[in-house]
Image (cartoon, rainbow, N blue to C red):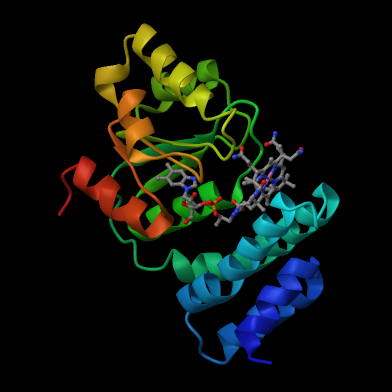
Length: 212
Ligand code: B12
C-alpha cells in the first residue's frame, strides 16, 4: 500500500502512535509537509467524516482519529509554519461557543503563522464576551472565527453583534470559516471575509489587510 494511503487508514483507525511515527518517517524521507497533510491526513479525516455521517463510526472513535491528527500536526507544524520573518500583524482566533472542533482552526492558525502573522489562539467554545475582551486587550488587526456545526455557526452572528455593541467593529476585520460556512452566510452576518480552507485563508487575510 502506498505510504500516504496507509497514513490515511491509520488516521481512520485512530492509531495515534503509528500515525505519529509514519508522519515522522515521511518527513525524514523528504516528503513535503503539505503533501502529507493534503494527500494523507485530510483524505483520512474526510473518510472519518463520511463514516460519522452514516453512523459507521461513533464519537469516541472520531475523537481518537482527531487525537491522531493532532499528533501528526504537532510534527508538521514547524515545517508548515516555516517562512514567516517579519510580523505582518496580530490575529486573534477561536472556535465559537458550543463548538469544540479545533483541527481546522489550528491549521488556519499554523499557515497564517507561517505567512508571518502573530497568532493569538483563544481555543474552542469561545463566547462573544471573550472575543470582545481579547480585542480590547490585544488590539488585533483581524479576528478569525471558526465553526463546524450548523447549530454553532449562528454564534458567529452573535459574536459579530457583540463586537459591534462594544463599539469595536470598525477596529477589526473579521474572517469566518468552517465546513458549514459559506460566502453567502459570511455576507449575511456581516463578516468582512470568508475562506474555504487554510491555504485560501492566508490569501484572503492578506487581501483583507491589503498586504501584497
Ligand atoms: C473530528 C470531528 C469531531 C471531533 C473534534 C475533535 C477536535 N479536536 O476538533 C469530535 C469527536 C469532538 C466531534 C464532535 C462532534 N461532532 Co464532529 N466532526 C469531526 C469531523 C470528522 C472532522 C472535522 C475536522 O477536523 N476536519 C479536518 C479539518 C482539516 O477540516 P475543517 O475542520 O473543515 O477545517 C478546514 C475548513 O473548514 C477551514 N476552516 C475551519 N475553520 C476556519 C476558520 C476560518 C477563519 C477560516 C477562514 C477557515 C476555516 O479551513 C480548515 C483547513 O483547511 C467532521 C466531519 C467533516 N467532514 O468535517 C465532523 C462533523 C463536523 N461533526 C459533526 C457533529 C454532528 C458532531 C457532534 C454534534 C456529534 C455528537 N452527536 O455529539 C459533536 C459536537 C461537539 C461540539 N460541541 O463541538 C457533524 C456536523 C454536522 C453539521 N452540519 O452540523 C460533522 C460534519 C460530521 C458529520 N458528517 O455528520 N467531531
